[in-house]
Length: 411
Image (cartoon, rainbow, N blue to C red; front, side, top):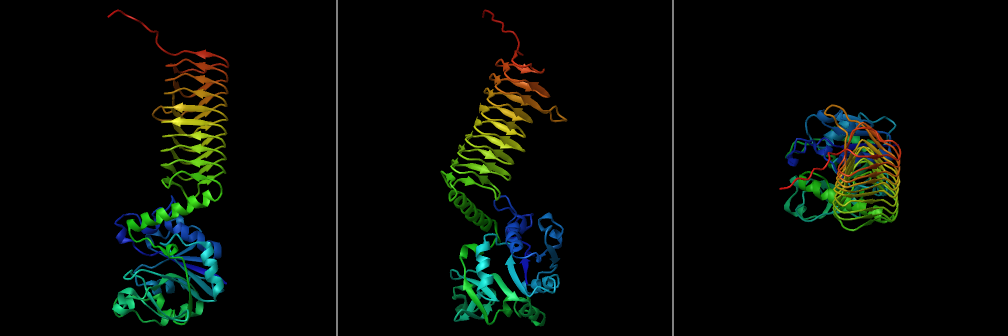
């Protein structure tokens, strides 16, 4: 039976940030969550070695957490975790909590090749990975970079930190002596006579600095874009930022400098123009969004909706064929089908204490530069004269004016 140990107790001091390293986001998702997704795919018995600060964090709500209070190396971390795995676990998959690019497909390859196996990859000279001394795909020993001789540092085959080992082998860590140089206990000391297989180097990219985080973000964004392009979504540029949960229908086009926050679903045949920001929103099919649009807050834009430049929409519903083409703010509103919202329209939804709803019916025409004071209901087929301030409900088919009389005087 397979169990998983995720090593995530690193303090991340090289990040130069107050936020714990494993909580930094990659595509709007904590980097350790990517690793946990892989871990929980293979086993319900997952133990994370972390810090006391993070033990109760919600990111670990579905796994067991143990604390390595003093950093004494990977061997010590695994010893701590072993006691938290059920006795029926006979094989242990070990993952690094700061390496979010590892895929389920790669782990399937690792755990099916041999009962015990280590992922290795080729690195450039002087990169600080543990060097593998091998013979015919069998590891003779692993030399940590800081313990390596100059000759050993020129070995390019290195330990990825990802491996599957027997519980019995890991129990031998309890008889281990610490490094005479660092005082740490090395997991790699028990890897003699274990087979290795080569993996894709990019998948083992760890995050130790903000530069690393930026590199991993770029690689994950590229992976997500390629995933959706394989399904019929066209990205006109690499300058599109996706979230881990962004969903698209087919034949959708996304132009440069579009940012997707969490919780966005886009339908078929929709086009999203440059410099648009969308989060927490469902967009239907055959819609046109942007450029320079901002949509957020549990919004739902139905089919054939048009949202144009410099329009902000918050927590609102736009029904089929509704159009808001220019320079408007729509908040806490429901806009009926075939309704047209003129340029400069604002729904005044906030009175300084509470938010209030605006309901606009079907096939309405809202003139340019209208100010609509919520709570209010503009019923279907009504018209609002341009430049109006509307403070009362408007009946079906009504025409509402709410502006001062024009006075012309001689100069």
